[in-house]
Image 1 (cartoon, rainbow, N blue to C red):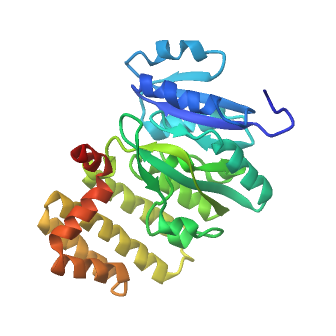
Image 2 (image 1 turned 60 degrees about the vertical axis):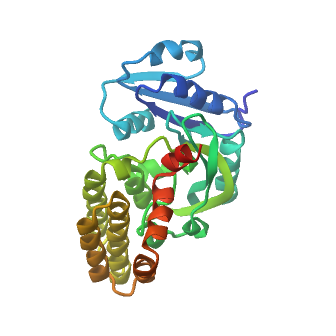
Image 3 (image 1 turned 90 degrees about the horizontal axis):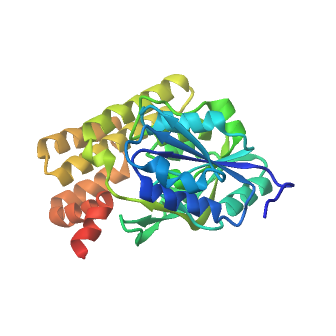
Length: 315
């Protein structure tokens, strides 16, 4: 049943060679308690049977095929096609819980001074089984969250929901980016709009693999580019915040190198983290763990960074 007196919500689903999972993602949107939605499915040059698998949905979704250009370019196509006053993003291997759209829409309607809201999410494995609930401690900071978001991305893609105005004022995705594409956009939005948070899991976020970890050098290069551009475009940002942001950037890299067993690179990143911000408490905490409980630290980081592999090894 449509709800013509309530605003249209555009849900953008980019996909590449995810035919079976894409059907699941689409069904999760069509099953929403809020029904005044449009589903924009952007096929980013799939070579599998995606088009055929989606044939039964041709009257329920807007299907767009484009040459392969990466997930950020596919999301931008969807953003340009979106007609809704509000926008949600959903990768084709993720799912919405039934009340996702309604709960997020209600929040933004009840908080007209907010432009963006995100939620908790369930992390799921390749079979769709829930691994755990994801809730980052910094998520509870709402309103002007730029300083916290600069320390690292804690907003999972399928949890995001925002006003069309955010896209119109901040622009879309930087198409040359891959791992930190979301983070780059969230930073630009958070710098202009208040950000809200709903402390319930309203989506399922697939952790099939950790692309940031698997292509660490690209991740490092692109995350640094995101930070460099943000601080260049916003010179008024407090220098303490800037130094802490770069310190956290190097800590993330050090942790990944540590899990990979790349000790020289780990020490280099850890040193650069200290040089960026000697008073970063996280640096001292990790340093203590490294000296006193190295293997315990490695196991803990491995579980957090490689959640899907950890589950596979447990079964």
